[in-house]
Image 1 (tube, one colour):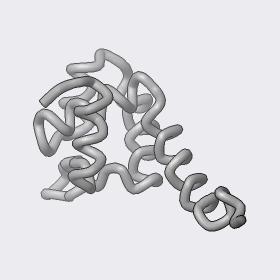
Image 2 (cartoon, one colour):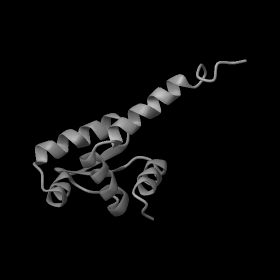
Image 3 (cartoon, helix red, strand yellow):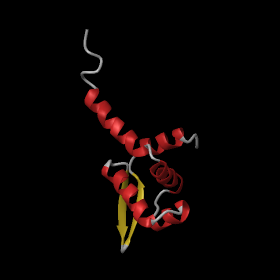
Image 4 (cartoon, one colour):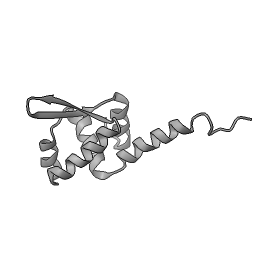
Length: 98
C-alpha cells in the first residue's frame, strides 16, 4: 500500500503556505477588495482599511511573494489584482460572497 502522503506532500506544503498568506485579517480584506473591485491601488486600500500605507504595503508584498496578486504599473501608480480566478473564487467561498 502506497503511503498516502508521499506523492502529494510537497504540493500540500505549497498550498498550506498559500493559505497561511491568506489567513490574516488585513490580507483577507485586501483580497476581498480585489475580488470585488478588480484592480486597486494601495492608496485606495488605505482609505478602506484605515491603517498606515506602510502596513498595507507589507501585506501586499506578502501576497505578491506568494503569487496571489500582481501589480501593473501605469506611470507612477501600481494597480494590484488577483492573479488567478481560482484564488478569487476561494476568497468568495471563504466569505460566502458571489
